[in-house]
Length: 442
Image (cartoon, rainbow, N blue to C red; front, side, top):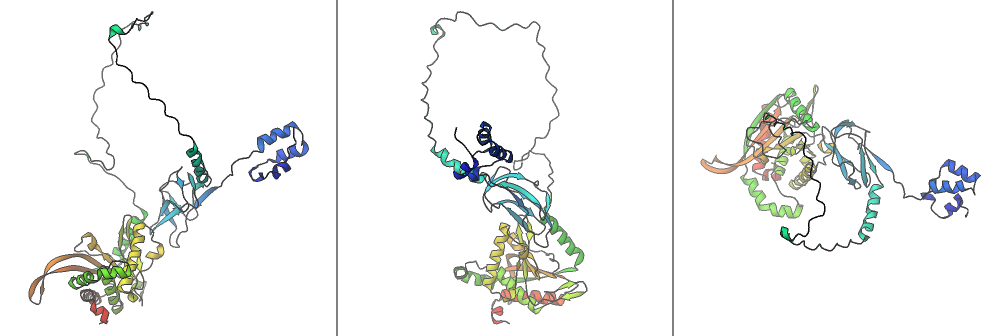
């Protein structure tokens, strides 16, 4: 029997795969040639695959204004995940934060249940980083395995012959079943029960006459939207003034240059750029509409940051386009395209929605013809756009059909008087109806 020592194992280059125990080391030192030494080596000094860590995932970094949120899991225990893959989302009252996997592996444990409220530093889940690496290694072995040889097809069984040709009967007939000693008792069928309405799976048609209710928990974002809207009604003295815009010229401008605009700037030319640019001009001329009340003071701004209301599957969000007064039509369209994509993909950050001095809401994309928008506090006014409709209007003493749009301005009457509100809305109307006014700065 050759002598086996720790030094010899170290020289073989497999020390990284050896896991000795302290008691075993003591036996090796004391009895280097004893048979018990070899038994301990066989039991404890074994070469095993490299052991991987279990990674614990914490909550992502919360913005300063966010302290907690509700977790919604996308992946389940046992699912394989890639590095940076989104395995869950944290829904806050302002935005949704993705929970990403730090590395490739397998999700082994969820430390919080779906829908639980979590805060900063909460441990969320555990991922086995080794499982994701070992799985691909088994694939080549499986591919190299020879394909099993298919069994030969069974010959067809011939059709049954007549009873006379079946051959001799068996020597001993089978044992007949025992006869019951007493008549079998027959249980009468149960009485019919009252009919119960069948359960209806989601998406299936309901039987006629079936009335059901379904309670769904409100999301944090929906709760926050409800709180802010009600807060605006309870705080501001809201009043709405209206006007209408002849969209003939701006539609002709868009139709004439939309292809060249798209070719040069890579985005489509819409109507929002005209309304946002006209609003920025009106806000500079009427600073009260761009101001807000802070306690007993009025805060005036020398910049224009316009919040644009965007409807998403999770609720209404208002990302902010900043310094609109310095932007061209192309700059506005590019900025709106980027914010819209972020909103649809759920990638809006708190910084994208923070601030804003004025809001524009376009209910016309849903076919709204008339409405009174609600102020987005702490702002003092909001412009509502509506659908374009062909309507008869009087023009130079004649009745003509023109594409018309109603616009509405809801404002806080505590700060803005009717004169400023009406003047601002007329400025928006003139700048949209004749874009040359903005070009000539008149």
